[in-house]
Length: 243
Image (cartoon, rainbow, N blue to C red; front, side, top):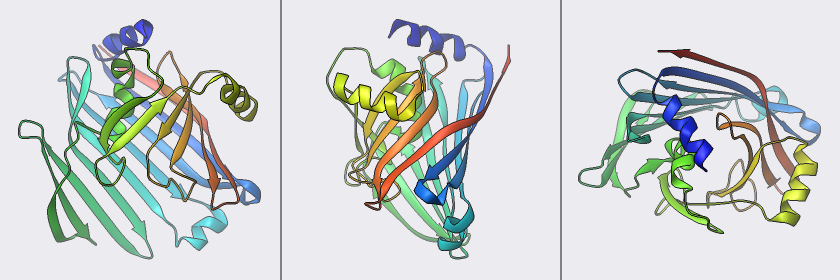
């Protein structure tokens, strides 16, 4: 993982914006969603990650134009992303459901606030985790130091009661099958989020990552709605840097 650590050191030394767009396809439905991912770093070591997902076609009609936005913002400390807050904004059936998770790392607490259509509805203490699911992804090159069969982490957005996320690298047989499925070169990673992803089976997510910039090239959720696999692939990519 040394080359990944070197990549992070270089990335965190500059202002940088990474933008990638993806198309997700599902069986005979074709393209059912368009996603855009933005990762920004400034000279003051602040970061912002934003993922937007917008349904398309017949799925948009079925879900009443479902739109989802996920945001992680925080500071970079010793090459590690430390989230200050994590936001989930889900629009469906004409309503806007907004959730913000506020981190207090010193006291190891997270406060969850809920809003509906712009109005505050509720707040409560949430389980503490050092990451959210977005910061965890970009921190993996730092975290994956020792060689293990399974790496266990905790992040807001993971398992509902404690945030658990398991990360592993597919074994030889599984890797061969995935390579035939994706036909994409890169680093193959398996994540167990312990939550159903897009109504997929067991919350297992497979990613193919470009090890040179840690950008996801393709992904798959298996057995969605017990019918087939949901597959996504990168469509456009750009990176802008400023010293």
